[in-house]
Length: 403
Image 1 (cartoon, rainbow, N blue to C red):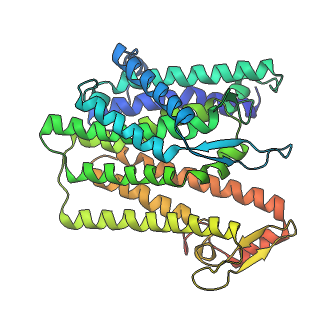
Image 2: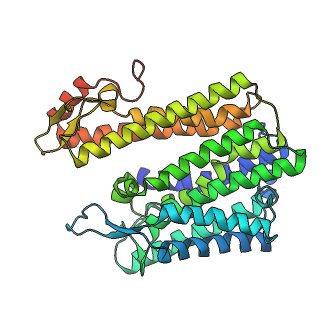
Image 3: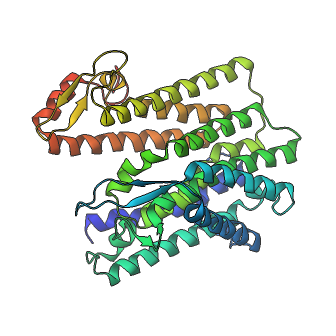
């Protein structure tokens, strides 16, 4: 078995149990990291319940309906290998708020209990796993029938065989990248806040901060939905288990660890701690959003002033322009620093009693450093000496003065 196969196989075998391990630590051990036996871990994999199937199935149906039928501006994506472009309907901002409104109505009317996520977390997790694995299998079968496989079934199943698989008008990758998991992340947070209130008669400042910060992040994502079309996943990654499982399982069930932890740990934050955490999150958000907007505007209008001055850049032999002023003159990926500041701010409200709530911050460090290095290697191969000149001009990768 080649290394190209071993990596995907290892992740297929390791990541799903990891999500159940996190839930075991949270639900049975108060967030403490433990070393359960294999039998105990397997026993903590519940079958789907009727309620979990109804909630998750109804959620997917709602999101598909919103994607297909809510009006929105049609935007062409980046050019494909053959020069053609796919069209995408950008209705995420409206769909996000409709989704929140539907969830609120469902709770107020008694259709769904407010704290359903805490009560059904395990069955919901299993249901999402079944959907993700089934979707990836369907994608693999479709790719095999179309002759797009490489002869390595494990890698093809994991990485995918098709860049932009579509089911009639539904672009499966674009849909899964944003709708089911990201919006569900926000609603999971809200449901966990309700669970805290049901158990303790209060929603703590810590829980409010986590909900507010993450709600802002997801709302901002949909407000700038057009930017999704230029992300690495949309432009370059084929759609298989890696993206499907990440979108449907990893995002809503691991990004909510902080909120889940706070249900059973309703500790108080001092005014000073609250102010400091809010300042950290908003500073990170400001850097993240301002730097991304600056890059987007430069791409559309290279002559536009950057911080009130003419932009500085390196023109490559390919004709591309590498911005070396403004935020992008401080570090090559200062937007990642903003991302990391927000990630830390989401974890700090949980306190310092256990390390598990800080998993997201550690995960983001690994993810963004890997992404920066991948981008560096790709740009080095593409631009050559021009990239060397750019790196000499903009020395720091993510953290000025450190990395």
